[in-house]
Length: 117
Image (cartoon, rainbow, N blue to C red; front, side, top):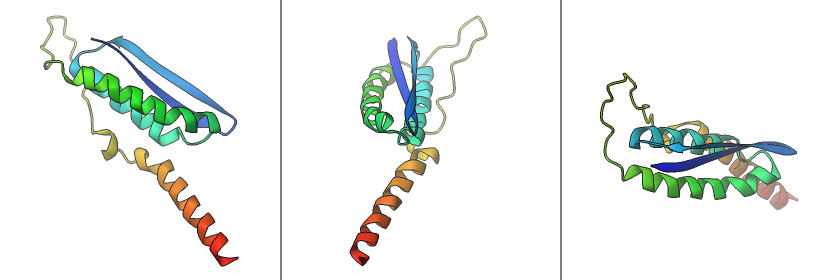
């Protein structure tokens, strides 16, 4: 099935976008979805452009994932290639919480600082 998964990582004043288009079997598509989405959730909060693109890319990835997840399990091929291991789900990867957690902590510290004044 044709699908495209995207990721964005910010670097203060700029950001980098990765796209992974291609025909995917179910397992390879889930692997790519999880990798690209975790990459966005980990580093997509480090620039203004990436902050805007991260939720858009996550939603686009979810849409592509829903199509890929409907596919049947991949069958072994005679050429020796095996499907990719999907790996742990996105929210079982520690990086998915790193920057959102730091951003939440920063907001709390700003609120506390403003209340103290």
